[in-house]
Image (cartoon, rainbow, N blue to C red; front, top):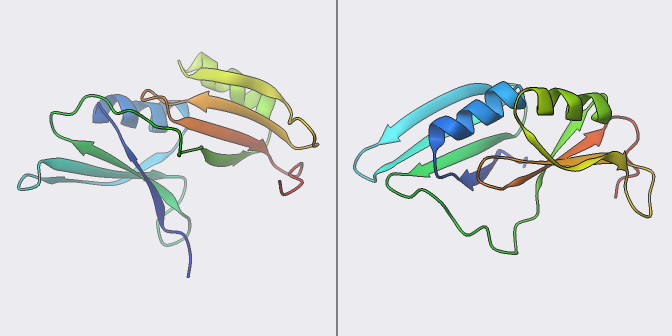
Length: 132
């Protein structure tokens, strides 16, 4: 078995695609409208789905926002340099919600950014993870 994707419901698919592709540098891997169900699925990631887990963005037509609730935590991305990644994300219009630095009670260097719907994306510096 392996993880295939994480699904996030989004209120504006174009805005979300712009964030995940332009700000985080992912690629749109596939997108399909389902008129009978009135929704669109878009899959984004850094590599083909056959090689890596990806994010499924689900847009339910006519729904512009969701209550994120308190059960969802975050999606984590490994980066070479968290400090540089935060600077790059800010330059591309992204919102850093926790600046880069070591996590409390550990040595892993992390940061958090928020996507346009408020979902948290954790950035973890490569080779510093203490497998929290």
